[in-house]
Amino acid sequence: MLIRWITEADLPAWLALSQEYDQYIIELVDMDTWYDGFEVYMARKIAQREALIAFEQDITLGAIAISRSGNRITFYAMSHIAEPCATQALFDTALAELDTARMITVNTPNSTHQHALNQKRFFEENGFVANGIVIENGCPMIEMRRQP
Image (tube, rainbow, N blue to C red; front, side):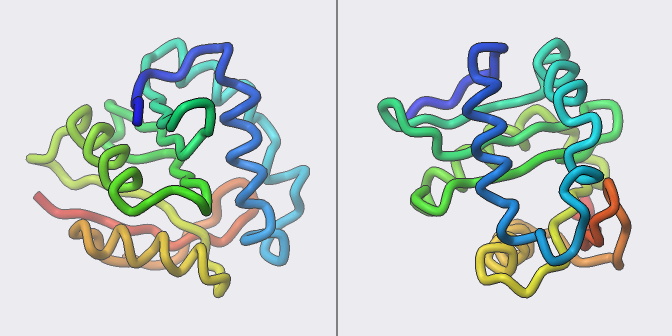
């Protein structure tokens, strides 16, 4: 497995991975609202070197974006075919870019779909605790916090 910084050439793979998650949130949000500004966001994360992608051969396994200034994970998506070790490796690589001596936050969809529940459980297993519901691009999300 290869984990590296996302480049502009990876934009189609990143967008496809994001769209794989649409089925988990479509009942929660208007998709036009959800994707409003997403291309600008992706370009900014690439320019700031705040987005990582994981590949196995030519298959995209996952992507994660962070905000160093906000000390948060701003995007997280793993393909349904990704093995748990790939999920953990991508997360650990991104976590190494954040300040673990400060609180770290991430928002995860407030969905009852199994994939979304698995994602929430993954963050809980990595020390995050649900802190309430926030709205992100029109979608109800569970804000999760990891204390130092």
